[in-house]
Image (tube, rainbow, N blue to C red; front, side, top):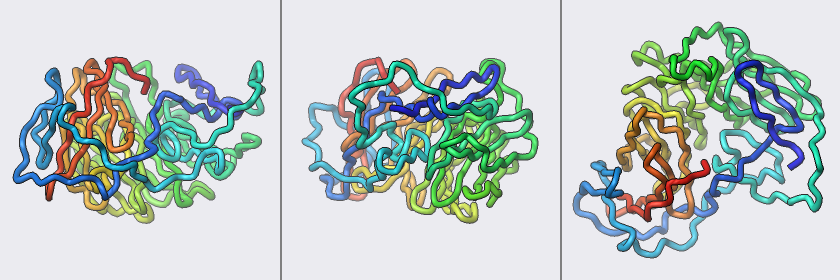
Length: 370
């Protein structure tokens, strides 16, 4: 496409180019159809412990069991999710992995002739970091580190002109020696929704900004709640919004919570106390008739109610260095995920009476494009 994003060099500067602004990786599988409330339910008198994979995954969930691929019945008729407007129609890429958090462009028209080279229209030095830029309503939002400040910038997409700049108080941060080359810039991608832009800094500070002028609406620092407020290699999960709730996993190694905040005030709506946050980001999907937040934690893969935060199911997801960093992809009535050195797999949550379970849909090759 005509506009893609230039790769960021965190050792020197993070350069944003409108000519290389909205590169959409085609690796992700789109969640075109996800299970709806009319999914088949089977009665289950009590939850079991079952094996998802002979090699690695066993689950002792509150309300899940699993079966082998051979016993999985045909999936329910093609379900529907609440559709997001296509990128081509709106031009918006307002969050991690785009409108549906799946890296997919809906109705893109492939040019008959591709240009031999891209023409640079403008270039702006914005700072250091791994956070992806957003594009919404003709504006580019970039979250980066400048000196000791974490800065949210709004730029005019046509010209690169700075529209506003909001800088945090100085953010002291020392990188883990194993990740020092990453730099101290933020890794979490903001989200622009409802006239607001929300950011999650490298140290786990969560902030809401007015998209019109960048003014701070509210800010949350969790240092009084948890011994550490970021994982070993810095906060990287990107928040998601469901209805009027901003959802983020806060805290640090071994102790944290997946929380939902009122996007207007920052008040906590619900909290799922769990182990520490992972480096992956949550998605919100309807599976087995339940609207749920699906995400990795430090050591587990979980689904919780999007309305209440109640645990619906979970499965172990322990890796060698606690580096769960893959955002799951929803496909039809399944979740596709991968674990470090454990390959890819698909799981299918199934509701049985009052309980939910997850069926393994078959292991996939140990190669992935995430």
